[in-house]
Amino acid sequence: MTTLTIDISYGMFSDEGNMAVHGIVIAAKSQNLSWEQTFKALRELADSNPDSFGEAMDTMVRECVYDAIGAEFQYHLPAGGPARVHRGRSGEPA
Image (cartoon, rainbow, N blue to C red):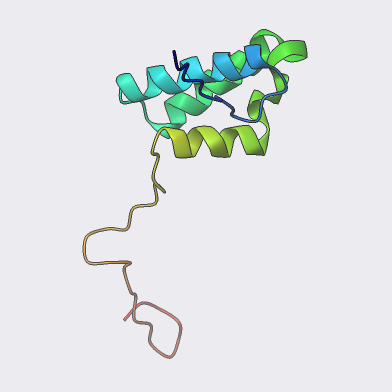
């Protein structure tokens, strides 16, 4: 019999921490949460028990979660690109 094992790691210091973060990832993906909503859940986890889950706000953990949920950079330009303001010699918009 072959046993399949999967190493679930988000950079937490314990298996319990990695499983807690994995729960957030599963919820974020299944509920189509935004990065902001997922970040809030990580913050709540870290604050709920700083001794056990405080590292949930570490950069490495956040980056792992960001990638795991498939978040995308959320900077949006207006249609047609950034606005360009042409200025006259006085510096006032033309």
